[in-house]
Image: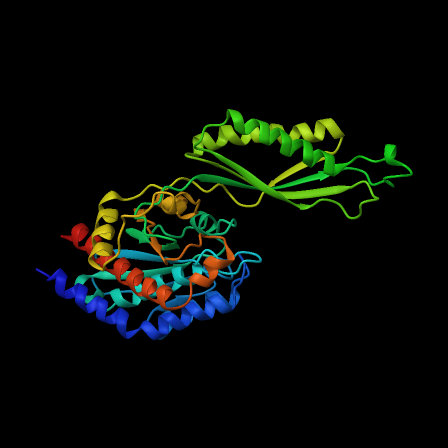
Length: 382
């Protein structure tokens, strides 16, 4: 019988030994942020470090230029665990969601687990997944056959505080466009069709709709193009909108109601409406409860705490395409705190994802992920 305590001590020592490399990777990604589908340098850096530690790299992966798969196979494999790495940044905000730490924690956990993989019969797979921030990179990979070889998938996501269970909203991402007719706003206003008025009416309709919506849904967005000049009737307006709900079934009903609000803008103004999905729908998360319990115990053993302010803990509601992976592979997606007062998607949170506190989060996250993968493998193969 393997001594799990001794194996975990070896894993922790490996995390410590590779700490400088992992911090270097995290800082490198943080200092050179790349947005979804454009993460060429970022994906290369993550794959390169894994290759340096004996992983066999396949890049590009399944036809996606910034995706990769790294495998550390073992003879007589009894269990295949997948660590998922995200590395896309937010437009204008850099790594304000901490994906630099996600990559470093997954890489660190995978390298550390390789310390005992042969004697325990574990194949370790790291999948680099682009465009989580609205692009649905994992969904594209799923539809091309990724993840199916895994017995278990996991990753950890930075947040203000530690929260074990992810409870993300299912979400739809839309690009919304109105096309009208330009005209001089003072001389010939009657000749124009005001595409900006269409957006104003739609947003007012959505605001009124919210009164009749349950507290478990979200509708939010922004206008990215409102016109070109104050003395010209806007010919085209554009925006990006997210619709979120507790389940995919609830989301489909909500989509229909929100679509009608956008149609109201077109009907009232005569502008043409075009709604284009920016990605496929993100689904709700299906968490493996036994694996989650193992992660919680491991995090507590490392000195982490889940006794946190409930308001600070609500980052676990953020939508993620890891939800789609969890529908086909047993998975967990815990949140790990970096401390401070900032929350995700703020410039200050990007600042919090480097430095001494973030480095401790990185080490704890890598260790907890590797320990949890070992626990799950031990139970599944005993």
